Image (cartoon, rainbow, N blue to C red; front, side, top):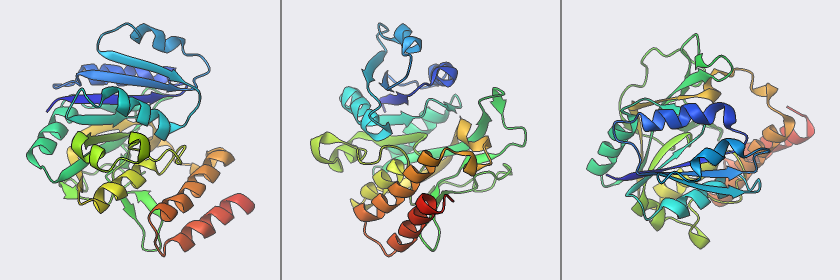
Length: 275
């Protein structure tokens, strides 16, 4: 199965080299990589890729993660049967893409797959000392909060079986082209542009599932992700916490549910109580 990769950058100079090296080391590398820059203060670190035949480089203002991924999708959609949406701070193990592609090719009812994400300390340039997990699939609490399963937990080989899940983390998300085309929004968008940042991966997975596609977690598709080692979520800037809370409300507007009550209460708490 031919694949293409889309990577959205925003001031990602510190991690992009490691990410691209991990892609180049894949046993079945993508045929083309789209680098979509969304408002980096200095784009000099991307210039070296502009004239390489295996790269497509686009520059935009800070249009947001979803819209930038949509630009990447439009640039590569005719190049491959599956598209890997990869964060620049995610580093797949050498066989991860080949394993994910093989599974997708063998399971025509599966719309997208996600891998086992492990924490990586971008500051120290090494995996987390305690071997923390970043995500083994995305799930929803009984009251409506979405969360990455096992995040922050020591990696003790838990949840090591393939399984259908509600959603997968967009840091490493391999999607079937036909599934994306079938569920695309107006103007061919695969990610909802209203989600500037956060929850856009969950919204896509919900849309795919509503159309009858399965979402599968593949533990053998391993990638390191820089988010996983950070324990203090309150250290996030206030505007990022507010954006995440707002998008939870938006998610339940797009996919109506009684869980909207939780989302509204969370948004109020973040906005007015600064929680």
